[in-house]
Length: 313
Image 1: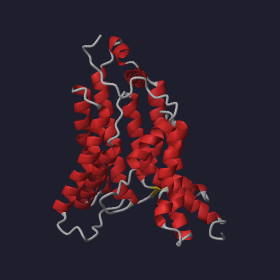
Image 2: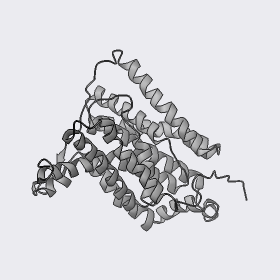
Image 3: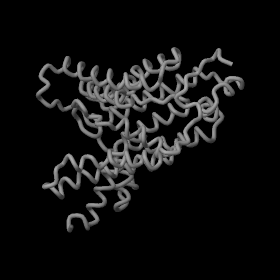
Image 4: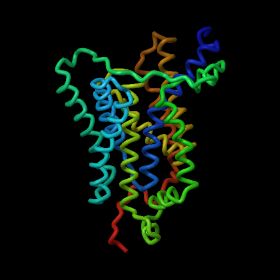
C-alpha cells in the first residue's frame, strides 16, 4: 500500500498511460478516417504487424528511427491498398477482407523476419527513438514530465487529435470527406469524387496504422517479436465506437485503455503471487465492457461498411 500511496507512483502510472495509449490512438485515428469515409477496416492488427516489422528493419539497417517510422507508414499503405482495391474497386465484403489482412500481414511479417535473421532465437536490438524534452515546459514540476518529455511520435499522435477535429468539422474538404461516409450518392451529385475520397481514406488509414505498429518496435521497445501487436488493433477499433466516431471521444477512450494497460503491469509488480495472465486480461475486459455498454446503440456513419456502386441509381 505504501508503494501505491505516493506521488511518484501516480506520476509514473500516468506517464505510462500516455505512452501506452499512443499506438492505440494512432491506429484509432486511422480507423476513424477510414470509417468516416464508409470503410470498416478490421485489419488493423495486420497493418500494425507489417508496420512494426518493416519499421524495425528500416531502423535497424539505417540506424535512423525516423526512417523506420516512414518505412512503417509506407508498408502500412502498401498492405492497406490490397484491402482498398478489393473493397472499393471490386466492392467486396469489407469484414472478410479485413480479416484476410489480419491473417496475411502478420504471417508475411514473420516470414520476412525469419528470412532476414536466420537465428530467431536471439533477440535483435534495433534503433530506439529518444525522448525530446520541450525547452522550459519540460522543467515544470510533475506536469513537465507528464506532457513535455516524450518522443516526437507521442507529440505527433496527440496533436493529430485537434488537427483531425478541425479538418472534419471546420473545413470544406473535411465535410465532403464525412459526406462520403454518410450518403455517398448525394455527395457524388455535389461533385465529390467518392472513389477518390475512399482511396484517400485508405492511404491515411494505412499510414497511421503502420506508424502505430512502428511505434511498438522503435519507441515502445527496440526489438521485434511475433505477437508484439497483441490485439491493439481491435482495441483501437473499439475505441472508435467508444469515442462515438469523434476525435475527442477517441482520445479519451484510448487513454482509458492505456491506463488499464499501465495499471496491469504495476499490479503484476505489486502482487507477484497473482497469476499474471489474470492481470493481463484487464485491458481486454475493459474493451469488452466498453463495447457492451457503449456499442449497443452505435451512431456511426450511415453508409459505414456498405459498398458503393457508382452506376447504381
